[in-house]
Length: 101
Image 1: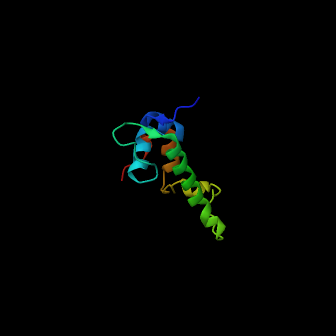
Image 2: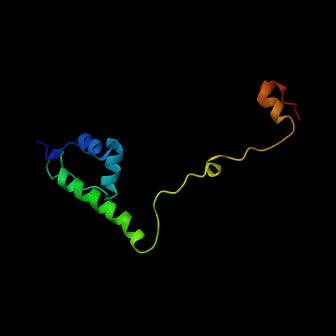
Image 3: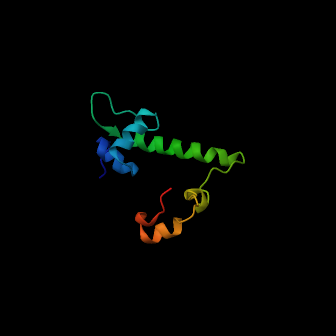
């Protein structure tokens, strides 16, 4: 038998996130508010919110847009490193070998 009402921590765990992130989702309207007068969330309301979020994400694909996962481009994740004389030597021997200006 499964519990129908969940604490904030249980609801967050159910959604696969942290309690703090779950609270942010509630504040943004992505998840339902707690049951008035309690500190509990109805698991069915949480399920319905998850279903709505999934349907909203799937809707753009239905009209020809593809907002699905994109291949990772490592070049976008790496910052360009400036090049200057002595940089290679400094990387190998430490900052004390960098010539002063």
